[in-house]
Length: 321
Image (cartoon, rainbow, N blue to C red; front, side):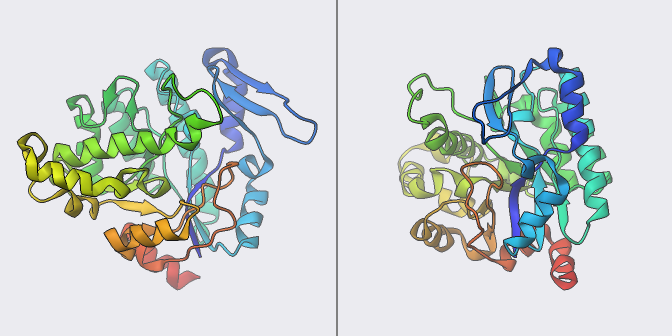
């Protein structure tokens, strides 16, 4: 069984955070006697530093206990650090990626990994993506853009051109929504996260970028957010409004099938619908382990989606295991 949506923080990254706590406003807070410290960077999106986030042996042990034989590990979104000056984001990205590459190199039959990149400087993001993939990483995990710039903006062209040339996996993973209406009952996470994905991916789909960069493999977190379940509305808009259809060569439903989606939906009926819409070869098993809101233990196994996304590497992993 595979887990292609899972997160880890190497010790080298934790040490960098401690050494640079004042530069990134990092805090460690105790919230309960039975909980690990919470890490809070720049007063945003704190999360519990469970041992499974930071102890490589414990991480591998828990994955194996759940029947996972190969994991695609991603950096945590809280450490993208896009809001900081680019030199900080570049420095943190390079340290994170080297540490992941070293770990993966020691466990290549059990682990693959994605990089984090300085998306706040697309040229440097392109360079870091190339460097990380030269180290053996499969692509990068990114947020849905910057606070005021969507991923379809020309600002990001150098990054997308490099990702396309490298045939990289680009895993779009949202951060918590900052809509001021969503301030209670955990709504920034519960509905804000899938909403951010829906906004980002609708913009990508309608922009025609999938035709301009056909070799990028875009993986969407949490089953694509809300978008797959409202694709009929986009199709209707495509039929009625030139503003919707102008950049597209086919209806939105066809473009939906060009993305990959993880299985983190916590609902079998929703997952069955997604499979029906895009095909099983576009769905990869994932859990979001070890965050609190993870689909754990993994309940969905699908080698066809893994091999479709990873290509030859997916076949090699299957044969090794």
